[in-house]
Image 1 (cartoon, rainbow, N blue to C red):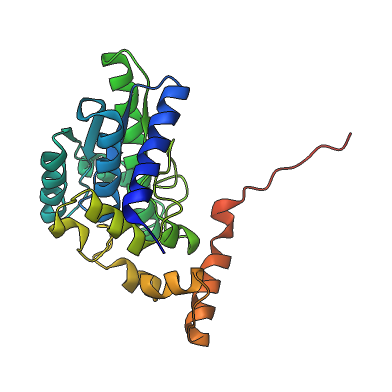
Image 2: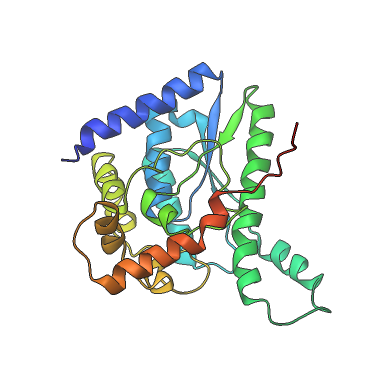
Length: 247
């Protein structure tokens, strides 16, 4: 049985120990307005103190409601929130390829999280200098989305610490309840904020069914095969082949 209170304490202690052991000062969190980044923000604030956590919103053709939800999270945990609008940067980047092709749908979707991750590391470097101590980037991926490869390689997969990576979506929500994440954010339908679709619409499978699969619970054969296909097709995101020299 999952004990959310105990697990929350363990995660907070894990974060504290890592920062002490590695002589780190603070953390930067990209706050999207969704539950995962909200829960990570709460965990980091509890572990490090609000003065050592920097939130960043990075709109890029984004929904204004997502930014408002991010502001709600930052206000709840009383952390500094920086807004870096990447829209102009995104279009400047795209313009460089306008003479090659106009059909860039997947490339357009994936470049956004990659721009955002570059931004988070830039902010971390800036605050490491300002605060006279090392700031690192906190990841927000959970176990359910990671298993089916629902992340951008070189984008939201890049970070320095992963507090939620071994928690399913329902477990993240339970942790969020313990940390009193605003309900408006905690229970909203998960979305990448990039494609105007929910995560589940894009994946073609529900997070509930992914969790059942991970827990070896009964599922239809079609659903099992869909999840297994998503995982198999995403293995390149986890394993980078390396040529090994023979002695």
